[in-house]
Image 1: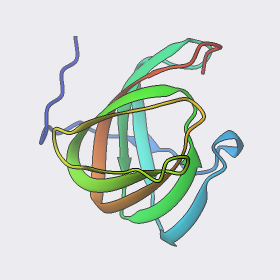
Image 2: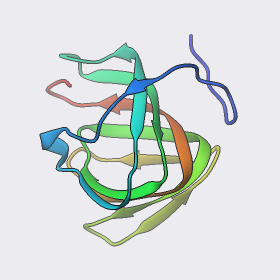
Image 3: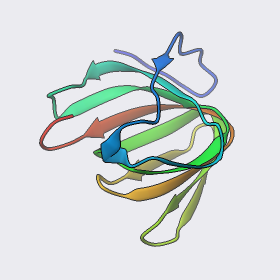
Image 4: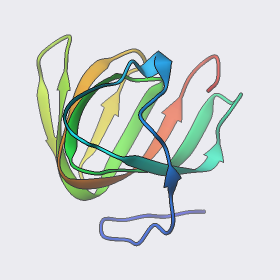
Length: 123
């Protein structure tokens, strides 16, 4: 069983460009770069578990699956476009996002998160 806690070194991650058409990424500020690694699940499966990192910047995206995340390092604010609610996250904070939510990520300190995702028809 994998366990991660705030401040852990998560090892090497691969580049995950912000280019998935289904997510309709829109960079609003800076040059955010993302990387990640799937630890379990993934393509064709309903669940996935992994790690994700993003450098500073601001971007909009549409979430591709239900996701529970916990921030391991860094700081960000996530704004739900439907409600206008802004959630500030730092190490140890968790947030649940729903499939199809349109959100703005404002990454103020490079963020590393661990996530568990679920999508009924598979990723």
